[in-house]
Length: 468
Image (cartoon, rainbow, N blue to C red; front, side):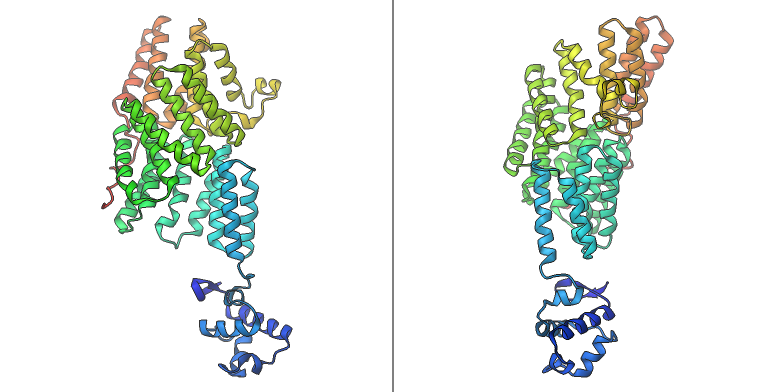
């Protein structure tokens, strides 16, 4: 493919166009003179059919009209309206992903294959972006990462705002595998490039600032998360996309929770829920129930927290969003333990950690329903921490210590400062109670070191704010 024709359509090579003109002319029984007149000569048509010249836009329109095809079909060989119809089907696939009406992944795969077959890189990128989102939900993080990276390669020559959804997707894949530093690096680099370029695209900026809140919060960089939330709120009046605004409200709520502003956080989540409900985006709506469950748990209303988390779990399970459903189960287990339902909490947690073990095989637990160190690493650590607490409450200090120590390298790898400090405190207390004072001091020192330097896992200074 080379050069552009009408409407920015990329043209085939001259030899390919020439053979197409010859075939269509022959099928219609036209002579070169009949095709050429009145605007062109038979010699021009002959030269074109031999592939020696590239037709101009004017010539393409003239020839296409005489041959009974569209200029795009003549220039590319694609059937008329193919790209438009493919885009409509991509919209349908995106709707299937949002509502959970059917498994969207096969739809996106088929559409991607069609886009490749007909040399439609823009539509191929859209299909891969949708497939990447499907794979994030199911927990196939390596494949999701490759989808988003492929989108960036396909759109390498496009303006940066076109690549921002893929950058956000790749950052999410890294965050879910526990690579928080790199997730922040990707988002911050894109923000700096976008602001430095003068491409003041409010939608792209809002998407990036909102996406950066979660990894900042996970690392304990609360001030940077709050600043990103402030910038997102300032951009909101310039954005019309309700899905972007809903995501912003959800992200802002998380910073409000960290500041103890529970009522404001709940109100922000309610706004997000209303928008997601109107848009029929079920996965994101489930995330709002998930966060409201966390808000109620922080506020001490454990019954409401349990109800919200169970609602989120049911919605995510129905959507086949396996990874997110597993993560909700961990938080639900925490609430159940706090409500005195330790047995029920343990029954939720053990299958999630049993992949590849004799326990899993005996119970016939599917691998898709298990967290691993590379698939939801923060929640794997949280599950071990909860099982440690349950074991300690039952007087089994040996099992408790085993779970705490299993969680320690996972949370260290992810760099979640607050969770790591809390875990070190639990481990230190257990060691002190069992008479191992020096080991307890080491655990406390490790926790203090992480608590004293929250957020230092981000790379470099915060991104420059956009020119409002």
